[in-house]
Amino acid sequence: MERRGEFRVSVSKDYLVFASAHFITFAGHRCEGLHGHNYRARVTIDGRLNEESWFVFDFVELKRIMRGLCDEIDHLVLLPTQSDRVQVREDGDNVHVAVDNRPRYLFPRRDCALLPIPNTTVEMLAEMLIDRLRVALEKAGASGLTAIEMEVEESFGQSATCRVTI
Ligand SMILES: [Zn+2]
Image 1 (cartoon, helix red, strand yellow):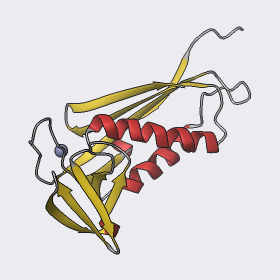
Image 2 (tube, protein in one colour; image 1 turned 180 degrees about the vertical axis):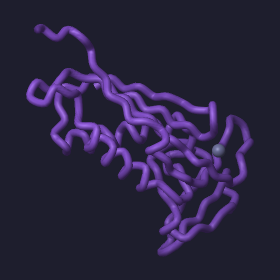
Image 3 (cartoon, helix red, strand yellow; image 1 turned 45 degrees about the vertical axis):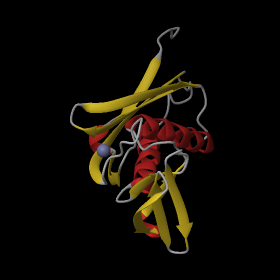
Image 4 (cartoon, helix red, strand yellow; image 1 turned 30 degrees about the vertical axis):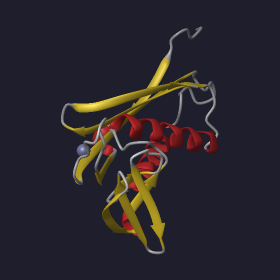
């Protein structure tokens, strides 16, 4: 039988949780105070069937990789290192955070995740997780993948989705 279908595999939210603190900046001078979310992620991978195993990618492996990516930022303060407005400076065991050049927070370095994004919105977190997942999938020998879609939810009914075609 010829296989003409397109295939996708998903791993979803209840399994992929990270509880983290953040604050985001808005256009103008507005900036949130520090607060936390129980973030949940859902990932979908599109691709061709691997014709030895007849799957797109191994669920067990995908869950393991995604769980690792969530653990990397779980229970940490998420800080953007590419923001024009938030200045994040490492100083020994500490991280100094200023907003619009005014000192605002001092955190222990071990409690922070310094992320290469311009703002810790769910959009940017989704894009970053896709980047990290792509690297991990390549290392795991994935082939034939055509797209990755990542949804990150910060509270019930409030999420952003990023889709990258490979
Ligand atoms: Zn928030």
